[in-house]
Amino acid sequence: MFKSLNQFLKIQRVIVRIRWLIFTKVWGMKIGKSTVISLRTKMDMTNPKGIHIGEDTYIAFEVSILAHDMCRAKKVDTFIGDRCFIGCKSIVLPGVRVGNECIVAAGSVVTKDVPDRCIVAGNPAAIVKRDIQVGRFGVLKKSKES
Figure (cartoon, rainbow, N blue to C red):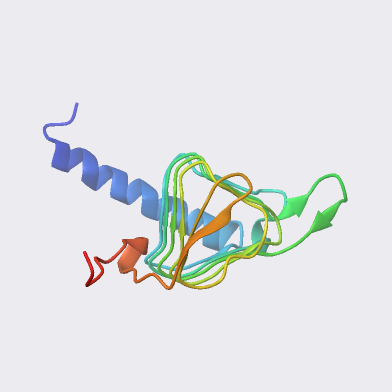
């Protein structure tokens, strides 16, 4: 079927790009062009226009991003900033704002706003480290101390 892993990766990149087009053009989500969203990420389709994701952000597999509260029948905006990494199986609840250059650890449940340049982890997500330096896709840069 696939002659090499490279061929498979090229096809995967095309599928990811098509999915980005569907999210932005059909569903009306605001997602940066350089953002990568895993094929197994779950985006809120009840209020898709309420999802805003910045540039150079990476959303890992099985992340859920919500923009509505079913119990209270509220539709709100959920924001994820530039150069962020959202770890696998994390949940970003409706109305939350994740700042720029943040890392959300795997399995975290983000219930409150996250300030810029932080690492958050846990359920509910709490700040683990502040004033971090990240590159593209929220990759943590090595500090001068280590």
